[in-house]
Length: 169
Image (cartoon, rainbow, N blue to C red; front, side, top):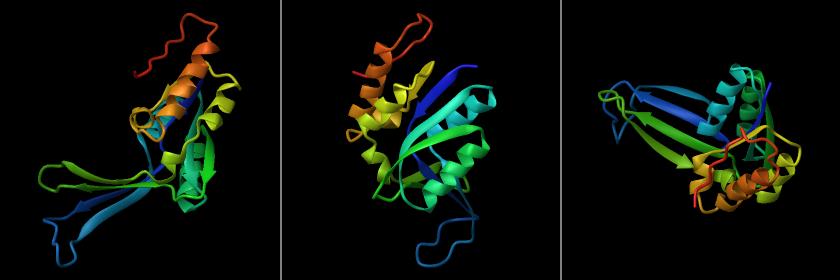
């Protein structure tokens, strides 16, 4: 079984599906769901379901969102390793247009922006067959150094030609 470290955002997803047009000055009947989100966490869960030994690394606040995310990942067979900060955990509100199905996403990255390079490098030192760094981590200026540092550190530990890494410039 291969071991995979997935690095990415810790997010609470709030999905809002209005029953009709949004009423800006009144209530709009809607269906609302709340749960663990984040593209990297979704990948981690899919990898665990396929039989990989998966660890998810990210940054979260010391709050209820962190607890929800940790519990959801554990239930899915993923080991969460979260750097806890004084900021609130990330949240995204997705409003789904009832006629087109398109979504508008309102995002607060919160503690995700505090992800530290040192936190990730310590984990990589434990040894993983593969490391995946989410695009959100690499595209955000506040976490790019952490993501690139993780990839650089992993590339220096390679001892097998079948492990491939990609890195943005």
